[in-house]
Length: 176
Image 1 (spheres, rainbow, N blue to C red):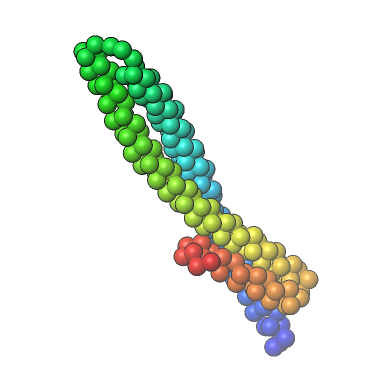
Image 2 (cartoon, rainbow, N blue to C red):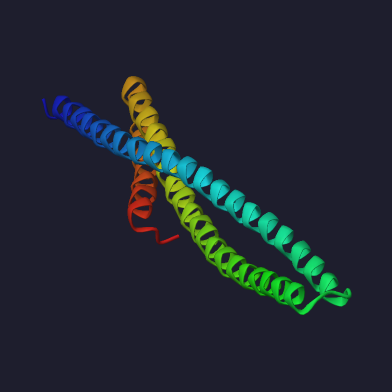
């Protein structure tokens, strides 16, 4: 009778292990999907920010061409009123170039910040994805161990399940 209780307790332990690992896989899968979606959005945002940066660069380049044109005009023989008019345009061009430099610096800062955030999001998402993989392997080994009545497979499943828990915790806390 004592021998009949051992397999029953062992089967309950396998059932509990499988249930816990299934919950871990579900949580990790959900978090992984969240971070994958967030990474896609951040990638799109970063691309938009760099496109905006390029647009500002193109506008600045056009104003720099105008600036040179105004400088050449000032070298030409013209009346004082014309020189005054061209000088005002030149000053406006210089001010616009400075403004574009400032705007581009801010856009670049935002894009680089988005890139850093995206890298962290991808890293966290990969931790959750690994947690799913190891949880599924742990479930599979525990199940096969129960079917074949091999406690050693269940123990290996427990170890791999523990690895899954490490990746899950790391996804939330990001140690590695």
